[in-house]
Length: 413
Image (cartoon, one colour):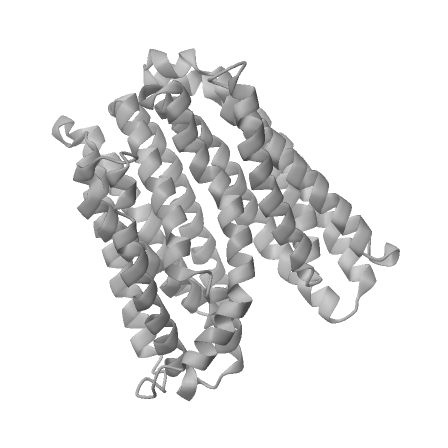
């Protein structure tokens, strides 16, 4: 009963985190000005993107190494990763001021931005470490405080008190939530009683890890860049107020990927990896078909429900601007559906160790976005970015599907 109870609590925490983030975006849309919501959208995607520069996706290497190392030596690996992080901090934290110097973000946000960036990075790495150490339940608690509990706090504050309806309340609660997650994660790691902390930083090990992590980092930066550059580009074309509508709709659509991650991909892609490791072609085919079928069905269900729900939700918000730009929602929903569908051949290639076509697809997909959006902007400023995303994600879907069929033997398909 204990493992079942832990799994139910785990799913409950992750579900509550997802609902909390979804609820927050709607309350912010109702009680904050559209320009403030647009600015909040810029902050969140910029912090999310900047985390890759502070971490370099080094966890891809560390996670595998941690599992191969005895507990009495794991502390040295974590200390070595921390040493790398300190170097990256010294380089990229000062460089982040360029965002403010170039006017992409207002200067008053700089201390908030730096505090959140550091807290988010450390708690993200703690979350990944706890998963690697098979402490999934504690990892879910860290995630809940980092990304869910503070959202509920903001929702209560801005709903009950008019004086709290500002961006500073959101940022202060975010820092409180990430700080709480940091304390919980550190306590759990200390209680793991890992050894090796007194050993020196293993720079040769760090160098080896960078050689493995950097190619994947480039692909990740290209893919996540689509969901970062799009906000800034949209603001430049349509203005900060209209960006608020874009942030609202892209937030609604983004719930599709979070929903699929929690409900389908997290459960099925490890089975693909296991089937390939065991050379079980029949099992691989079965799990791939299951993933494809569940993805298609759930995309249709989610899209249908979202399409029916958006109109009454907009009426509840009582913000005419969001209704005026409701046409953005359908295009963004289609773009996200293409992206989520592309994850099916993505995981099939990843499970078989075919990383190179994934890296190429993401890099070229970003290039497609940067070339298509200016062309679309000649005809429409409001739809240029959504159409650019559709073009890029359509290419990525086609490329991954083609590479899957090209690189996967027939009996595995």
